[in-house]
Image (tube, rainbow, N blue to C red):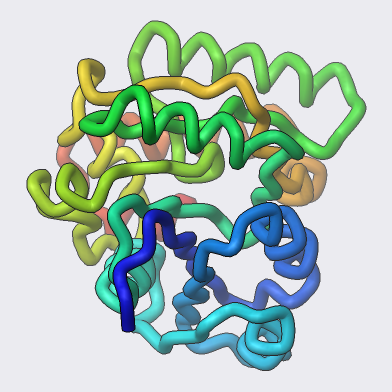
Length: 222
């Protein structure tokens, strides 16, 4: 297996409904796509293979799955992407420009939701503020990172959640850049749980993390 310039890693768990659109957006490049599956009971693995992705099995949990996906491919750059987050057209040009101009830095995309409501726009503005002021993008914005940097900070730890916050904090503000192209995430969980309730739950999980509560306990809140 040769070394690629870029590889895309997607953790999945029963993601058959959202994965096709995500993989379609990834098809803008010839980069290999690795789907790290955590034991799906639906058609996710078969669907991923049919759409050209390589499937690797991993212990359930985003941290272990993302780490397994990264370990399964040789590439100079890694793009970690959620299975319900679809990159907007033009993402590849933005990624290529970043890779050429900032070879030692990680990057993330602009958070957007597939919902036309005022609540969605309000949440998008809050996330933009969080990224600008706190340098804290989440995994649903995608994370583009050079392999050397990924390995130097220790990669993804085997956490069931908060794995994105954990990695981003180790990267630090000075090694993070925001890209203008949107990563459009499904708003299903906000519509299902309620916009305020879901956002409050996410904030509670982040607060618990900074207070040192173990991720396995935070997972029960999430």
